Image 1 (spheres, helix red, strand yellow):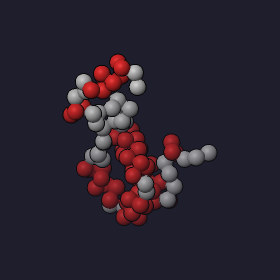
Image 2 (cartoon, helix red, strand yellow):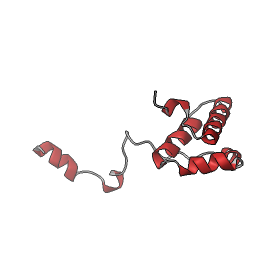
Image 3 (spheres, helix red, strand yellow):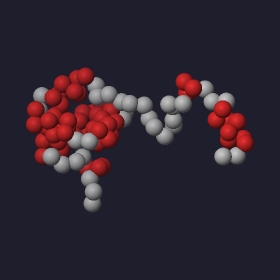
Image 4 (tube, one colour):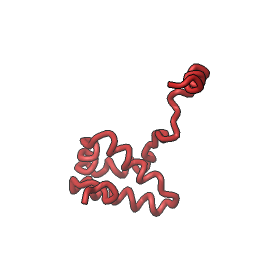
Amino acid sequence: MAQPGLAAFQAREEERTELSSSEPTAVKLDPAYARRFRADAAAWACFEAEAPWYRRTCIRFVMSAQKEETRVKRLETLIACSRRRVRIPPLRRP
């Protein structure tokens, strides 16, 4: 590493080392949505068995919608796909 890079590394703030613009903060499923999802035991069991990256991405997919109607529609899509043991459409391979 060049001298300017080493100087910047040495001057960093330790508490900010975990922050990165490429890694968004964790998003949690709204409690009402989580209750609705858990009510379908088969879908919830399948979702819980998925890899962590998939669960995080699905939760972000649901919660990132701006309108309530869109979040509900995405949640229903996630539940239906989980019940059928398939991935949600944006994450399916062609």
